[in-house]
Length: 373
Image (tube, rainbow, N blue to C red; front, side, top):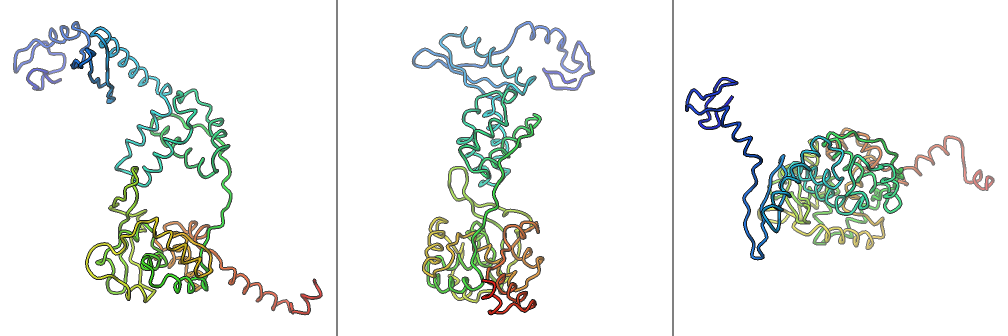
């Protein structure tokens, strides 16, 4: 054991410290008999007492009108925290979520933490102050599903379940609302050319062209002049919004495969590269989104978001008979299922061409169609 007076190592059970000579057993008894210690407080202008108490890593501000009340509140808080330590199921849902978010702030992406803060402030409001051991979680999910979209509820539950696991609380099984299969927008291979004409000369043209090279909007905002050289684009980081809404730099982008080198495939990129150093695109994300949508309307094509242009890259690759490996490598995807389910969208024109091939195989002619009608 360690002597508390000289910090030297002494044999366990020693009565005296062999180094400083202090009587350890007596001192410990005296300390125990003295009772619990209370943190120092300061007296405010109105005569009340204010201090801070730390128990099991949790800090609480204690305010009282007298010293007796101050000590009583300190004792009550100690008892409360120790009870929660022995019975974690008595903690409130908001407490568990807050601790999980704070614990991961600085570890997870600022954009992820920002999403967690939205959930913390706006979801499961009727259950936040309830003890996690007494919550009917299925009813909690059902109530939320009456107010929000299935995907929103699923994201909120994902945070709750992660926080419960982190607090070593068994995660109950719940039935989540089914998320309907959505039809994401994209530009087909003919629409892309019309879009390129419409966006030409626009302040956001370079941003749009980079997205058609598979870059995410967050990755586009991070690209610098030094990242484009020898006919390639080096994608290595991202600019995202943090929990306050401020744009901040991430040292790494979404996943390991997102760090990649993308060949420049649209010659116009090299023509409009700005001179000088620094980031190439400094326009706010909302402005970029608006300009892309307006260009789509001007061209008379499917109105797309910045992420839809990334999806258009994958679908164009599919139309041009790129291999799935090539699409994944250039686009930075690490899951082939993601490419299949979300990003590779068969163009309607491709489908129509395939249908016509099969009709021709069966001898389906214009006269046959008239007869069928």
